[in-house]
View 1 (cartoon, rainbow, N blue to C red):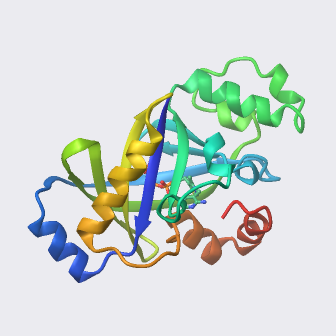
View 2 (tube, rainbow, N blue to C red):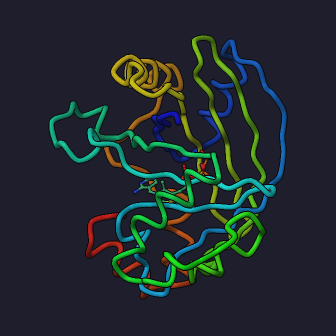
Length: 215
Ligand code: V4E
């Protein structure tokens, strides 16, 4: 398990120019389709847990304790921190823990090894979109992704992956330095792809997440 520390930004021509002039390595462009899953009552996303399938691989993002502590600097407040789990049995265990209160059947589910494990847990896809991503690697483990989603939203992210129990503070500082290098302005958190997607495609789900202070 690792922790993804990330700051999103709205990408404009000036930022692109700075990026081209900065010492970064472009590691190319690729395209992927994401599918996000939840129960009919949104038990996962209402807990800020995001179950995703991308290129046949599963991932679960869930909040870290620090995210909710409320004691952070202005620039740290612009960043999100999520634990990322990619090991399928561990994902299934975490999801079961959340759903066990609402769905007793998950206890009875037999084989969790085949592709339909999510249907057995009554999890259905609530969001599906394709992203074209251009990625850049900076020194010191900082990565910049420029995403163009197929529903017409363009967003950038500065990202540092921290191992479990790793130095989140240092990751926040690296992100802050990179943001300054790129000349990022503004002190508002920038919306992620999911927020924009749900607002447009599932306003009811979006409103529930807003009320729960998840988005
Ligand atoms: C964590 C989260 C979601 C899951 C998708 O996360 P995100 O990093 O936005 O997507 P992506 O495609 O860049 O994933 P990667 O390739 O880095 O693994 S959907 C909503 N959230 C919560 C969330 C939030 N509350 N605020 C912001 C600014 N972003 C995400």
